[in-house]
Image 1 (cartoon, one colour):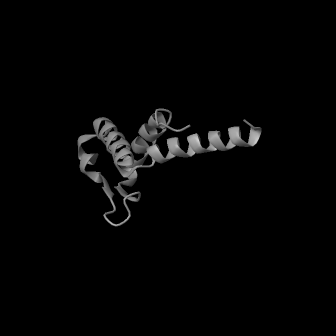
Image 2 (spheres, one colour):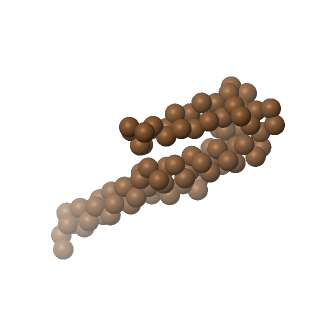
Image 3 (cartoon, rainbow, N blue to C red):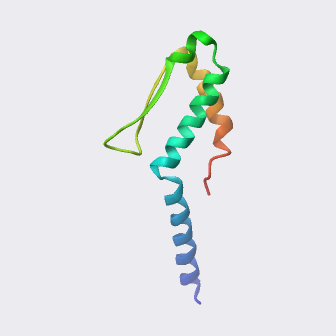
Length: 88
């Protein structure tokens, strides 16, 4: 097996792993998880100020509607969850 074949096999495996992480169901799960964790730490008057909706036409696109006051909490949860995402 030549070096080129090994490189192509590695690239193929990497692409297959990335395709698994970019499925709309997987992205929806992570958005839901991050939103739920953000809602847990938000004060009660900001709980209804965060909303994430998946675009029906483009399933990899999500519309995030969030209050400026809730954004810092969302960002902190997103940063803590970033290292748990299945990215290779």
